[in-house]
Structures are given as structure tokens and as C-alpha cells.
Image: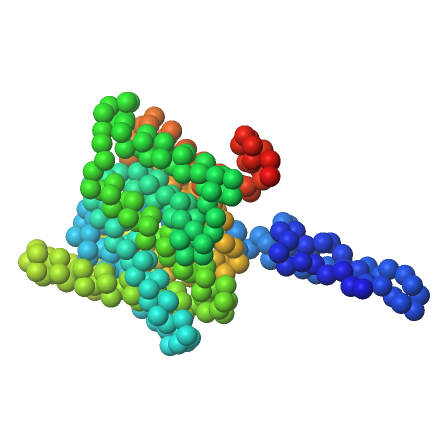
Length: 360
């Protein structure tokens, strides 16, 4: 007789025991799997710590994106950062497994949707609002689980998803229907782009998790393909926008943008630094860290760990852009983050509060 840890258990047993038939005694040894899954083990902490670090760095994307949009067309700013990131990760692209090439390309298309709509939203929408609405990824991932993986999403099966949905909708209401100090407001095109941003990134999280679960050694190639697809699609957008729709803006090319970092113009220098930072750090390095961590945690948990991103975005927007956070923004943002945290709860933790849920 051998007692083994069930892989479906959330917490594997601390010991594995076998019967020594010669001495007729029970011999128990520490379970290495339980030790590695301890909340204080390096294996447990490093992917979650990495995602939290990514969250802080992602928070700089929103104010810096708005800063770039003030000096460059949104299409050029997005194309510049994506091309820099793609060049940085290009050595890993040939190592992508042919079996997941199409999946990685599809994932890159949704990643592009997230980045492009984020840039469009930042044109006329406060950076903090764009970031808070981006937290709707917490609803996108469970929805994809239900549609693609047939995960039950009934009230008793997944009450945490319904709680997160209610909190998120109320949070959006505060962000959209009230302005600073209670002034009447309303949703605009920037808010629509902000929601599309959540769809793009949420779907990207979901697809990345699936690829990394089966191909944990492919983090670098997968990231390189995602960013490469972003660079291609953003480049097409930039060419169409600057050459066809706005002739005369072709001057905003990447070489001159990067060289402006060393120029005398302070405004151009700030834009150049923002392009370098968002391209190499918060796009290339962050996408790599995020993809690596998603191979160790679920997309739903990743959404929770990244839930602090809007807070950092609001802090950086206040520091870099002088944005003022109103009462409705604080309440709405808090509800959006609460939605992310609610989604991490286990169904049994909430079923006790649902009438008749314990009656089977």
C-alpha cells in the first residue's frame, strides 16, 4: 500500500507514507512537492513576486504613453516602442516551436489589440481611468474559461466571478457616470478603447497560460513572437496613419525619436526616453517576465496579482502628469481592484452566504 499525493489537491500532503512489509511498520517521508508548494518557498514566491514587479513597471506605461502621445502621433508612439521591443527579443524568435507558432501569432494579435487600443484611449482619457478600466481583464479570463473550456459559471459554481462582475460594473459606473466632485460625466470613445484594451490583454493572458502550461521552456520565443506581431501590426497602423491619413508626420521615425534623447530639446528628449523605457523595459522585459510567470500561476491568479497596476498608474500619473484624482475615481478604482481580489476567492468561501447553496 502506498499513499501518494493527489495532483488535484490544492495542498498536497506534507508526508508520503509507505508500509514496510518486513517490519510491518508505516514509514513516512517529507513530500518534496508539498515543500515546493509552501507559501514561503522560493518556487511559490518568485513567479508571484515577478508579476507584482511587472505590475509596478506596467503602471508607468499609462502616464508615459500619454506623454508620448503629446509629442508623437499615437500610432508612431506605439510602433516605436513595439519595434524596439521586437528587436530586443528577435534572437529568441527562431527558437519558437513550430507546434505553437500559430497559437503564438494569434496571441500576438490579441496583445496588439491591447496595446493599440490602450494608446488610442490615452489620447483623450486620463491615464488613471484607462488603467482602472483595463482591470476588466478579471472578467475576461473567467469568461474565456467558460466559453472555451466549458467551465461552469453558475452562481453556485463560481460565485466569486459574479461578485467580481458586480463590483466591476459598479466601479465602471463611478468612473464613467461621475466626474470630479460629482460633476456629471459620461462614457466616451476613449473609454470604449479602454474596455477593448482589457479584452485584448485578458485574451492574451488566457492564451499565454495555455501555451506555457504545455511548453514551459518556450517563454522567450513566445514573448518574441507576441511582440513581433505587435510590431508588425503597429507598423502597419503607423504607416497608414502618418503617410496616408496625415501626410507630413512621416518625420516621427524611430531613429530620430531615439536620437532626440541626446538632443537639446527637453520635450523631445523626454519623449525619446519614454520610447526607450516603454519599448525595452515595460514591453520587452515585462512581457518576458509576465510570460514566464504565467507558466507558474493561472491567468485568474495573475489578474489578481496585477490588480495593483491601476494604483501605480494613478500614482505615476499624478507624479509625471499632475493628474488630479477625484472622489469618484478613488471609489471606482477601489471597486475595480476589489473585483480583482474577489475573483481570487474560492467558491466554498462564498457559498455559505448564498441561500440554499449548502442543500444538495
